[in-house]
Length: 120
Image: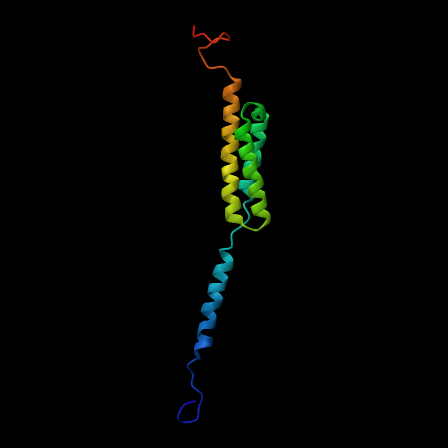
């Protein structure tokens, strides 16, 4: 109220902060982390490639590491820890690709070496 008995036209502090608070809330909601769908799919595909390359027999430790990382990623995903699940899925993909490459190297003889192991 003013001295003349009329209401002031200046909004109170809470009513001035309300729009700012709503904008901040909307911004936080927009920044919500999405589930790592693509990263999980990529990791599963890399694991399938490693298995197809017989990594279980030829690069067992590397494949086991990738599978363990994938289990961790799945568990983190189920817990809603999307950033951590994304990172772990990316690690699983990398480990699976390394296992695949290791298996392929072991399956393919080196160039310039015959089956007797001698360089021609």
